[in-house]
Structures are given as C-alpha cells and as structure tokens.
Amino acid sequence: MKTTISILLLILISSLVEAQETVRFGGYDDQEVKTIFTKEKRDGFYGSFSMGYSPIDNKDGVTVSARGCWIMDHFFSFGMGGTAFINDIDRFPWDYYVNDEAVNANSLAGGYGGLILEPIIFPLFPVHVSFPVLVGVGGISDYLDYDYYSSYSSISDFFWVVEPSVELEVNFTKWLRIALYGTYRFTSDIDIEGVSKDALKSYSAGITFKMGLF
Image 1 (cartoon, rainbow, N blue to C red):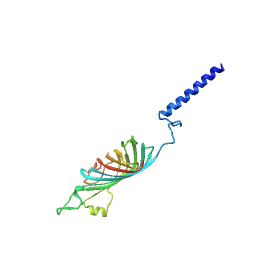
Image 2: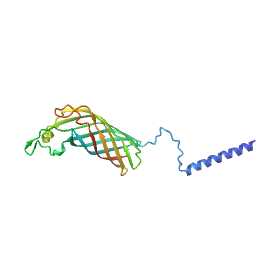
Image 3: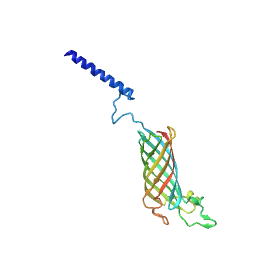
C-alpha cells in the first residue's frame, strides 16, 4: 500500500513539474497570481494644445484649446480644459471700416472651459482613438471693431457647454502623441441682439498635440 501511494505521489509531482515547465516555455513565466484589482496599474499625465476651424454664427472661426489630464492605467483620463474662439476671420484684422464703409455686422469672441472626461480605446496601439468630453461654462462677447474690443472687452452673455469629441491619435514617441479631432458643441441659448441664439452650436475640427507621460 505504501509503495502504491509513493508511486502516485511521484507521478503527481512529476506532472506538476512538467506543467510548470510547459507554462514557462509558453511565455508565462510570471509566478504572481493575477487579480482584478492589481497594484501594477500605471498612471500618467499629459498636457495638450489644439488648433481648429469652427463655423460660429455662420461665419468662419478659429478655436485654440488647451487641457491638462491625469491618465488612469492608459485607458481613461480626466482633468481640466478650455477653448478660446473668434469668428469672422475672413474680415481680418476686424476693422470697423472696410473700403471706407462702416461694417454693420456683429462678430463674436469668447471662451469656455471645464471638466474633461476621456475614455481611450486601445491606447497601447500605435494608432488608436479617444473620446474626450468637456462639460463646463463660458462667456461670449460681440464687437464691431476688434481693436476696440481687445482693449475694452466685456462679456455679453454666459452659457453652459457640453462638447463631445473623437480623436484619432498616433503615438509618435513615448512622450508625444498627435491627433486629428472632430467635436460638436452643445450650448445653452445665446442672448445677444443681432446674434442667433444657436450661434455656438456647431462642429469643430483640427489637430491636437499631446505631451506627457503616457
């Protein structure tokens, strides 16, 4: 009986050793038990700068954005961001007079900012997508003469904004990502005489540069 038990134990030990060697040679030489709540998650951060085009109140406009975010285990980031905008850029430098005639048109400028929430899909792939969403508030002003506006600016109205985005990112280096983006602004109504209440509800498209520890 003892001999039989000893033989069974030897067979069991041999099988376990063989299984361990198979796992090791199969590329799984990590002896630590994997759990859902692992401590080996890697966090990071980044700062970004964006430039884009956006029609605002049916006039060509430009947007300039910046944000700073904390990245949680590569797949989700959150932080703060903001965007400045101005329209009627084809009338640069926004003089009140064009060809010695007074311009009777409202141009717009302003900005908004708030919380950024950003799911990231397949972040370790060289090319991947992310979906930043900005939720915040902003202010807008109208002007006829930009030189006067820039010297004596005042807020004409405030608004809330929700701006979902999609970004197609390329990992150029470990610290640099470049993305093409598209967004759509959902805002509360704008209350400025001579300006559409939906003036800011529009798309935006451009390029983003992200630098940080990804």
